[in-house]
Length: 68
Image (cartoon, rainbow, N blue to C red):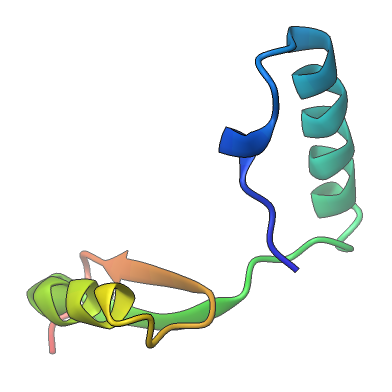
């Protein structure tokens, strides 16, 4: 299940409550990010194509220290 904060109304109290709950879940290890792939900096163009083509299921990370 995904969650996007852009859909939270601009109510600061609501936002704070949701953010607090999300951070608590993450701290407890109950909320984890799904990582689809990690690419080197040279692979960013391909990563963008994959995202645009809806070929990913999760986050795409760029590892600036990786050299492939």
